Length: 266
Length: 266
Image (cartoon, rainbow over all chains, first blue to last red):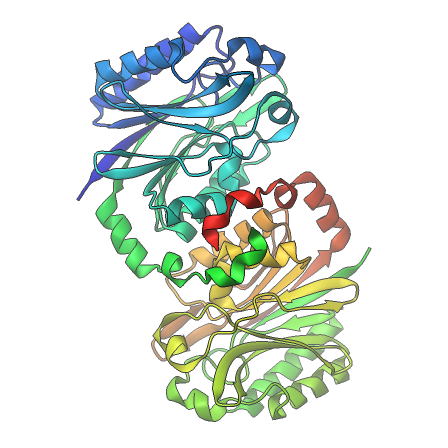
């Protein structure tokens, strides 16, 4: 009966002065998470650099194996927990809005490039990824990766559920007045596609953006197992694959779908 | 700027003694709805006969042009409003769980057969429909029809939005403890697919079922414009296609989809 304690780190507030500051805050959060029994720590979208970078994102981006990744790997190995973190990824001449998952021994487990870009900043600076389902295994639990706007599309979460994702990790940068997303859409996604969904948001103001906080972990029964407020916070919740299996047997959405009727969606 | 006042009739409680009783209650509700300026009245699932019929459904079913349809057409013509009502439909040797939309002159506008059947009673007694998107126009508004469990599948509502449905009508027979559906899933559907969604439930106890009421009309901004309690009730709400158009421009989910990434869904 694999189970996994997950920590969601909502913070720090505002754009960090440097990546070093982000890494110091991450190390502190990882130590607290590990001390609380968590096996996985998830940050918000573009965690390493902050979100509202404008054109500066070109200078701050790095590769999936860059110095930021190496530093996160050291934190993961030192604390013995996995870390999923958002960052702007450079690959050749392209920039991606990415999340990378580092394992508890410091190994790179998976890297996902946001497929549904949101708003003028993102569409101007980033190339959308073309691989919707990126997964990894941790402690017997199948993890999947999406980012922010991605999870607002039921198709994206459904694709993960159909591919076997049990715990979907979604760093986000969700601004006011879109509180409907963490309040209503995230629990709906977990219920309708029968999986756990961890949604780790930014908080505080960055330029024109006012991030809403409200990070949460939603369960396949539609309940919210942990919920952050508006400010910096570390929250914890447990994922239980036995509970998930029982929930999928009782709420048979995945089995009751009629794929042949959905051809207009593709 | 087409707009449409919609009435949702949640009632009467329990299995009706006869179809005549259902029709009498429907006529009274239609008069009240018309008197309040409604142009459309929607009932719950299997309204004419009640839901918990067991094997009796075979005896009670009728064709889409049967005596129940004729009686509803008379009520629609007398009150001058459209009526969407649920009923068990016989077609040849097959039974369907259907909703029929009758226009304000008593004309049959559309008939939809539930595509996603729920639970042992329905799967034992009904054949699933194979036509997911059935539409009709009323007062310049494009209407669509689904039934109960159908709308719990985001794919079904998405198919309607992509086909131009502006107001989706969903008679339902939603039991406790599934209050998450009217509370969370219905507003989520309206928001994520950017349409109005009218969800008219049954209320009271029928055999093993305890229907939850909570009928509602959800708007594309994710708000619930009208909500019934647990008992018999007629609720009213307005649909505004100008508001819908503005909401779709601001919340561009339908335009921002990436259909080529969703091939695993079909």
